[in-house]
Image (cartoon, rainbow, N blue to C red; front, side):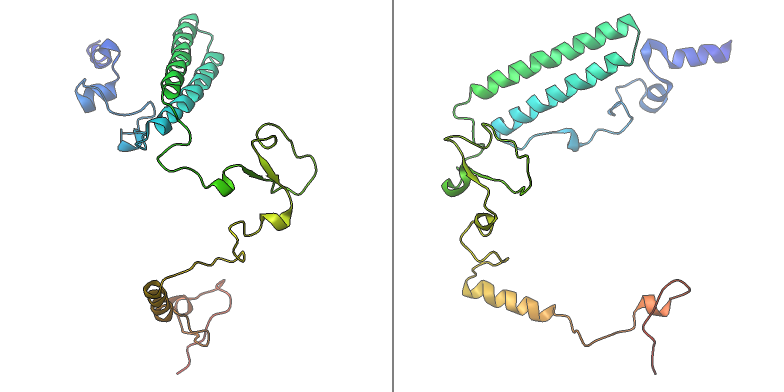
Length: 208
């Protein structure tokens, strides 16, 4: 009975023996899976409209999680608690949406506007049948580009991975290329060759 009383005291007030022993009854800064809290839990990029949209998405995802939890329990009390929490996600999303649309303008995010040449283009990269059309890619707002020839080098270049450099940058790139250039004629013996055993395949033979 003394041992039973000990275990009972460890879990007193709803605490687990883990939190009692490791944290002395203080709040454990871990998530439901026991993973310690880190700064990764902070979801902010420093722009209010970005952060509000992230919050809106998080609330909608959380509501679905609560729905799934409700579906896997038959305890009426648990269902009521989860239903309350699920509904609070709905309220939070409504609140965040109101805050977002109280900022005018709220799109696009940041301080810089999009490049006019590309802001209204929809590139149809699928050349097969059955492409769906709707307000997301047709109408006065959109220029629908489905010709494969018009989708190559839309910046007016030659389509290659090229960039225009100044004299100083070009000299630095050339020096870097010379320093890191590979010798296609070389076939050095490597550690893999020296330590090769059965199953290694063909290796370079060390010649004296």
